[in-house]
Length: 380
Image (cartoon, rainbow, N blue to C red):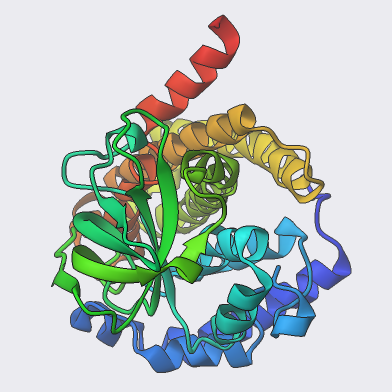
């Protein structure tokens, strides 16, 4: 079915993204995977191409559009290219809304121009060693010292952790437990006591730097408080829906692309003297995956359109996230199986997609957390 959510402008932007990937990313990506990190110049190139800060107002150097469909196009094309290492979606769609929606005018002028050029790379630090999806279990704390906060604690699994110049840190600013007393503090590169640990060795997304972060008596200026004091939990809940939509968009795009690759493969690969595509079992497998992808695409496109219009709620974003990413996981596994031994070879796209995509059902809130959110909304 022809997709109805994109206009000619969105498709023109898609062409721009594909050109960027062809020229600036794909020729270097294998080296980036070996290095375990993307060079800063790649971020600056993305800035020059206008791919950073799509929703940032033009007065700060951004694209000036809050239309999430442009972000969806960007995510779809990076996913199809297998280029998860350049975490533009994290920068634009997860950190970006905190800066545009919560920052003061002074903070916006200080941070947003560099955000849009790629000179300032961003991250958000929520997850801790003892508190994965449980934000209420956060122990990183900041003590009010008059003109600054004294920040202590640690974070782990932080995407862009090595490269980040600006990290939005979720910290406890009161001794109260639960959701109360969390605030967002912006920690900048070079602050004394801010240290980065290992660039973590993951099974997939090798080019994407993921790190441990440590805060030892970091003096965070009061002017680096983002949003309301003790209002961090509410701020996080407001922006998590977009993060989950970004992951969901990647999930269905990956599943569709894997289906395309595998359909071509079974037409060409022969077994027992004939193409695999002639075997009924193979046709049934392809039929099932194609149907699942088509049904999921219809729901995801509706969610994209709703989010672009500002009407998507957290429950449907959670539905989209868990369903699309679990589909991606199933499709990756089945497509690898249909490739046989070749599917286990790293040089084949399906093998890389299998390992790169496994994190999708975990970060941004696990599948189990998504189901809990949905269940509570229906049964409370």
